[in-house]
Image (tube, rainbow, N blue to C red; front, side, top):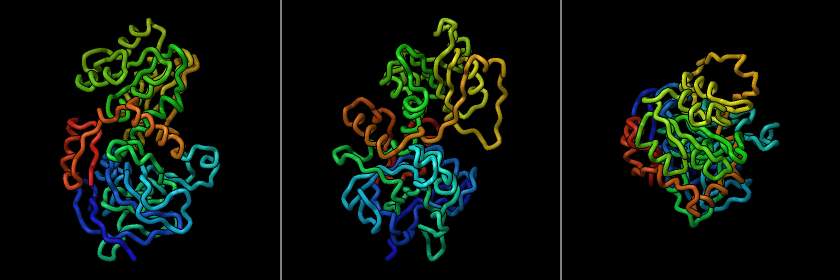
Length: 368
């Protein structure tokens, strides 16, 4: 039988979140019902809610869920009722990138996660009064007290770790950490620069602090976030509102340029500055997403020193191994996510949205 649950519904682009009763479809063979304990709020949720992406509205968003499994479909393996899970993106599990350990680049990633609003077969997972709603967001739509979750979005985690402390691992944190560990892969003495000290950027700073990199530079325009970056492992900070960024980085590196840059701001001017700051064979990882169609001008001759610019989705992480490793680091106190998190009751989702937009909250986490 369908399950009635309370969800935060976005009625149309630019509308506020409205709490309403919705119905979850019966779990399919490869799906599970999860009682949500916590879910992170991400800029991607806000971008879709604003109407910036062609996701079908009215709909239910949310893609950094964490909860307890209540029921599983007959074909689900490795997960059973009572398991604690972190929810991440879904993927087909069959294409070349999925089979090669890169499910974030699944051939069907966009419709399955970001813009489709339905299962791969076109059926709806959520309805209201008999009318289908946009759902299946990142295979979960976790802005609800219960979620119907795709099997490939489920990651079993240590039940001793509070779920509200690890919900952001499903998207923002693994993106920042993966940019450093999976793409930049710092060697001894590396210089790493993180552009933007939000949740993704500060996750990258924490990740860099766990590598042999010896110079870790955080860049932002908010002094409080730069101070926090120092506490989380940055060896240097640059306030881009007060200092020329390229000149500051040249001074820090003695004119040699930096080895790796994580660009999280989505600002193409900042991206260009990051490319210009790279040294020979340096790599810039593009994480921040500006509006579709945005372009950036580059000095082509400046790239001939072996510079690389790499786009990134969700840290290029294989979630079944990556997320449990991050949970272990959180449990050990080596990845202090609590410094980023502000918790809000689920009913206060609009306050969390306002605080995130105003910069008062780095990573809001809704609790149920």
